[in-house]
Length: 513
Image (cartoon, rainbow, N blue to C red; front, side, top):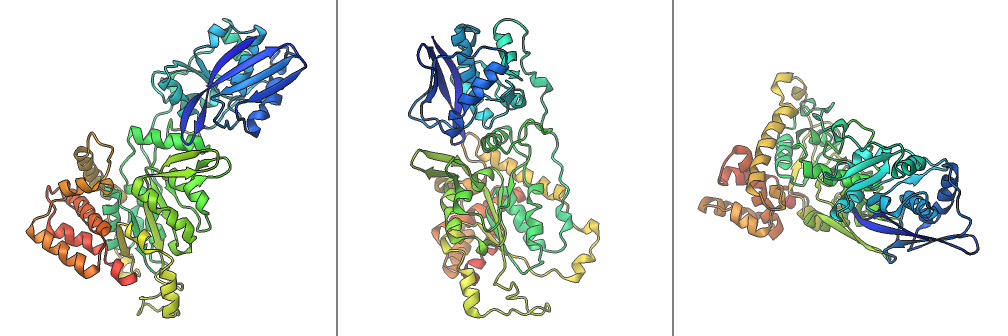
C-alpha cells in the first residue's frame, strides 16, 4: 500500500514542502529511505520503528520504501520522523489517507513515541501556508512558533499515539490557542548610556549611527569606554517592527537559537552579536558541512560588534564587504547555493596601535610602538573595508572631571532613543512602499533625490572631497549621514551644519590610512 504525507524542510532560511511517500509491500523485510537523506534522516528508520511499536502499533515486517520528494534536494535533520511514522500508520490501515492528506507534519520522535521539538518550524509553517495548506501538526514545544503564521491551524501534539487517536476520530487535540501565546512586551535593559562618563562626541556619533543604521568604527586607547559604549547601542535603537521580528525569528529558528519557552512569542529585541576575534570566515558568513546562518546573518536587523577589529583574520574581515553593501550573503557549496539575509549595522572598535597608547601623550602613558609596527597594525583593516564604514570617530581618554558630573547632567538611553525613534519615523515615511528602511540603505538615485544640496553645501562637500581624498562611496556616505543628522534636527533640507558634522565623522580616512 502507498501513503502520501506532506512535510517541510529548510533550504537556507526558507522552508519548502517535502512529500513523504511511504510504500509497504511484500518482500524481504527492509526499511529504505531515498531522496538524498543525510545521516540524521537515515537514522530515523530506527527511531520510527521503535516509536511505532512503543506507541502500541504493530510495525510491519515487510519491505518499506520511503521517498522524500523532491529527490534532487538533500534532506537534513530529524523532522521527517513524524511524517514517515504517519505514512506507515496509513499503510497499516490505522489512519485514513483522506484524514491526513491536507496536513503538514513535522517533528522528531523519541523511542517511546513522544515528540521532540525541531529547528526551523517557522519557515516550514510559512511554506505550508504559501502552498495553501491550512493545518500543521508539530510538537507541542513548537506550536507557539508555528502559530506566528496567521491563517494556519496548529495542532500541538505530544506523542504519536495522541496523533493517531485524533485522526481516527477519538480523543481530539485542541488547536493551539493564539490568544494564550506570549506577546512582545516592553524591552528592558540593565545598562544605560548614562553609565558612560565623558565621550560626548562619540555618543553623538552613535546617536546618528542608530538613527540611520550607519556602520561605525570607534578608535581609542584602552579604557576609553569603546566596548562599554558598544554594549549600550541596543538601548537607543528603534524597536523592531513586526516584519523585522518575524525575519529574525525565522533565522534564529533555523539556527536552533530561539527558545519558544521564553516569555516572548518572537524575537523582541534587535540582535547584538559580538563574535570573538578568533572567529573563522565560515562562522561569520555561514555555511559549513550542514549549512547554517553565520554571525552576519544572526545579526540581521541588529548589530554586529567586532571588538579589537585588527585582531580578526584578514580573510574573515574581507568577507564582510559584499554583505555590507547588498544586505545578503550567498554561500556556494557543492550541494547547494544558499542565500542568507544579512542587513546588519556594523560596529567595530580598535586601538590606534598595538600597545594602544599612540596619540595619548600627556595621559601618563607613552606609546612604545615603532612607526613600522603602527603602520602594520593599522593596515590590518583594509582600505576597501574602511571605506564601507560610514562613521569613524576617536574616543579620547576620559578625564577626572567627567566622573564629577552629576547624574542629571548625563543623558539617558531613553532620552537619546526618543530622538532616534523620531528620526527613524521620518525615514519610514520617506521610504514607504519600498524595501528601504533607513538612510544608510539608500540607493544612488535616492541619494540624488533626498540629499539635494544648495550652493554653499556643494562648495563645502567639494572642498572635503578634494582635501580628504574621498572615494565616490565615501561621498555618498557623507550625504547619507548628513541626511540622518538633518532628520534628527527635523530639517527638511540638508544644511551646512549637517554636512560639517557628517564630514567630521570621516576625518580618520586621512589620518590613519
